[in-house]
Image (cartoon, rainbow, N blue to C red):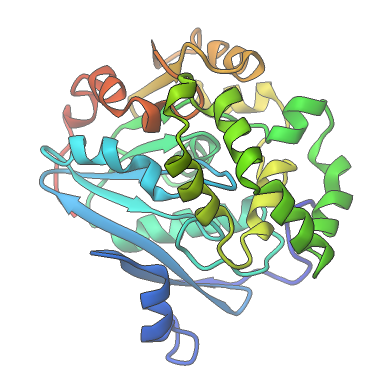
Length: 324
């Protein structure tokens, strides 16, 4: 299947001394109060960057998958939630400040990571706030490991990668592009072109932020630095070409969302691009779902954290108990 490696996957929560990240590698992926969750996939050590702060019941914030995405996109929202919740921010494998091993990234890897991370880090049932493609993974874990979440918030949820959405072709069609981008030299050059500052700025102005004025030079430079961390192209091309799509079609995504095992709120931006917005609007009639529409686009939580915080309206702190 697209996005999976050929060898048998192996995961474990504890890593041996020979596989654990060295103090130098920990310093290279973490800043401030960042911690490292040591994880193993296919006998390779993966250092996962995460941090926890605040007071109250636990809440995990999962950033979207994207070339430029990192837990930083959730920080402003997390800071507001931290007055009444203990929030945990994490970078997915291959993204942000976590290790960017040259895996053929796919759903099995991401599902395995999320299940292991939640099982190891949380000692009480957390709420979850999941953005973009992370929404499907949070819902899938809730289906396979109930009870898993005390409450679920999905921010601008998506199930289909950018190229399949734009071009109407499935993930399998883009296998040639994944192989090309993952190849040495040629792939590195192509990825560098795709992460040029003008390309990132255009992406943010077209469909990530609703207000073009917010797409400043400083923002673009920060996003470019994230995208151009060493070996960043492997997870990025998997997302862009649909190899991280957890489900094949809308009906399958609806089955994940319908009658969720925990109270669920969906928040998305009124200025979301038409194709993605149509998918989000289709969720409104599903049983057991609350939907709120606010100003913004695909990165509504990053562009308008205060608006999203107000839209939550205490939803996350209702009837949740226990700490981490």
